[in-house]
Amino acid sequence: MKTLREYIKEAEEKKIAIGHFNISTLEIFHGIYNGAKKLSEEKGEKIPIIIGLSEGEESFFGCNEAKALIDLMRKKDEYPIFLNADHHYSFESVKRSIDAGYDMVIIDQVESSLEENISSTKKCVEYAKQKSIEEKREILVEAELGFIGKSSKLIDKIPEGVSEETMTKVESAKYFVEQTGISLLAPSVGNVHGMVKGGNPKINSERIKEIREATGVPLVLHGGSGISDDDFQKAIKSGISVIHINTEMRVAYHSALLKSINEDKDEIAPYKFLKLSVEEVEKVVYNRMKLFNS
Image (cartoon, rainbow, N blue to C red; front, top):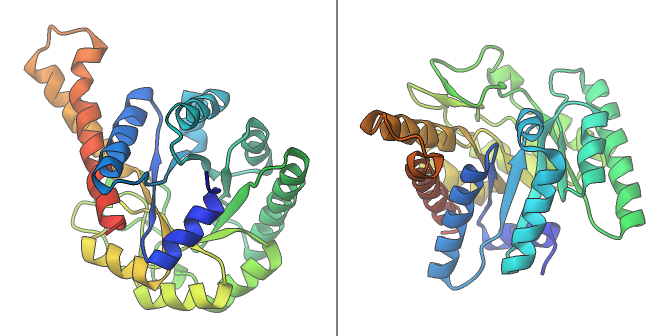
């Protein structure tokens, strides 16, 4: 099986993107995996996916439990499924995920100064390189530059602090990558975390292209939920290789759960009232992966 870096390189060459989907419960995982396998069967090839857990999701699901689950499915089905420590805010939390065997980690220090962000990120990169050599496996490190908000939920307006001024500058991105040695960069290019009820802002595809050319590393689009299909396609063509989807799945899961419970308030078997939630998450993942791979 190819490495995650190889799959990302291949995605960039083909002008497609790998879907990154977060989990916090086992049924959400099943919905994601079912959606990925359905598209893979239709295309006649196994489409790679990345499973992410933020610090909060990881503390709920279990760090080592997540690793064991991914290893099991990868071995059982020989499926290209990879595990990412999404939005970890300290070296200690990143280290824990690396030590557990994650394929990839994200150090999020966007609310720190540029130099503090560089210092924290560099420390994570150096540790990942050390473990990669010791354990003979590749660990990718991603970092963010530019603020896009922090909430993965439905929001009334663009998050406070997100503006044209907080969008990632090309020169800063180039300097940041050179100083840290990261494998991937998540820039602020008009994307926001969460889904804005009135509609998400437009993506600046020209800025994406400029950053990709200046930095020389693959780019990741966070806050994918709520972005238009047209903006997704433009972003991928401009240099985005990985796209994060979380809020959109949460909304589908939550709506389906409420519907199931309201339709039969006496049903107490989780495998029955959670079935629709799994199916709705599967639809979201299938549709997004189909778009990203078109």
